[in-house]
Image (spheres, rainbow, N blue to C red):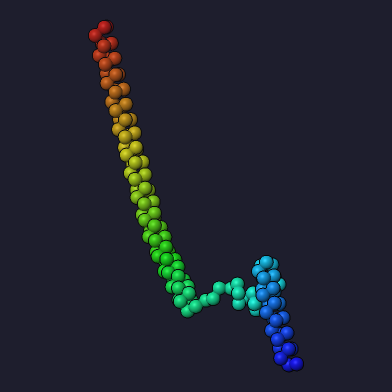
Length: 126
């Protein structure tokens, strides 16, 4: 009798478990208990993957440091460029003032020459 009970149990498990697994596949694992879902669906992490993850993290940290250094370099270059532009602007303003002073002086000289010419022309006609 014991033999028949074990045989019946084996047949039932041989039929029910595959049906249960197929039903779980069709339902995307909703009909499985969490342990079975985790065992079948969650990827296994190995030491190799963990090391690769650590390496990737250290590379990201190194890249962040490198980017921060690059930012500081760019900022210092921009500051130097701003100072250079300010110097050019001051030089251009100085040149403009000098040219305006020279043009004013030329205008005064031309006015004086015109006045002298009028006096010279007017003196001959009298």
